[in-house]
Length: 220
Image (cartoon, rainbow, N blue to C red; front, side, top):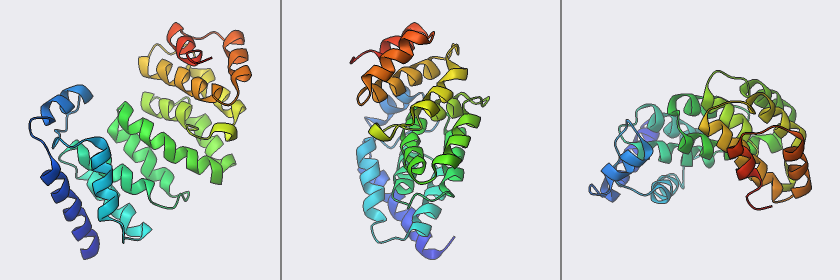
């Protein structure tokens, strides 16, 4: 690790600690069911601290600092800071490794859902390669990778690949896991913002759990 990266990581950690509210921290930890404790910093503030600290850093330094903050985290806000730094790195194919590492080790909805937006950026740049990844992840043994596959087009709006979304959902329609069923409904609901007819048609022609169906049709 370079001295400059060392300094950036230390600055972010110090700022997170200084911004923390010890009275708030136990409630955050309980809500997130987190093994890692919290400093007591709100998620948007954790992101802001990281982004501001790295304002003059290049992509290589942001990515290196992100990995260190993630792998050596003592508090969960360091994870939020790490993901915020990764979000400011030019979305090249090499980010897939970081995204997958964080989802597989973070193993919770807050991590998976934020990184789904990074995958959406990669879909725009590498549609064929990311489509192959999503198909593979949709049958992964890891529930969080399956959730990532289903949610990987969040925010794409009119650019959503409906066929790929259907492919990601298909092997998971009967999954009893709450976080998978919720993801299916959420992904369909988001698609319904720009193509409600497609979503209605999908729901009518596919057997979904009551939760997935309810979430998909919530705003239609």
